[in-house]
Image 1 (cartoon, helix red, strand yellow):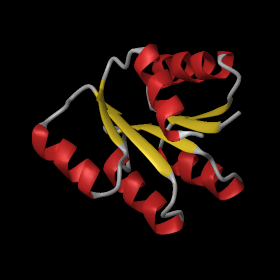
Image 2 (cartoon, one colour):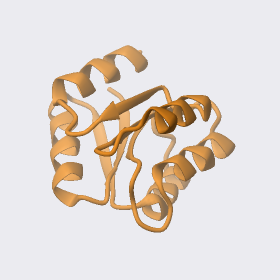
Image 3 (cartoon, rainbow, N blue to C red):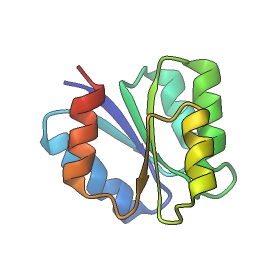
Length: 118
């Protein structure tokens, strides 16, 4: 069983992905923004962080860089409804394991969880 943090400012998306992953037997926690995500990461070492990119205050790319500084070994998957090639390149170069386009198919997320979490 993995511990997974889902970060998205859209409550319906966050709740849907969190409950879906939880139904597969994983421990999940949702965060509505990067500040909340960083607080959660200070309390728990998550096996996987799945984060939206476009969020208020601190975007997902900045969050990724903060996670990398604090926990270089963390598995981070970024997702966005506004995908661009330059952004995808930046995300991967910054240490994201994946760059997914929203809406994220739950089956794809499950495949990524299985791929990255032993």
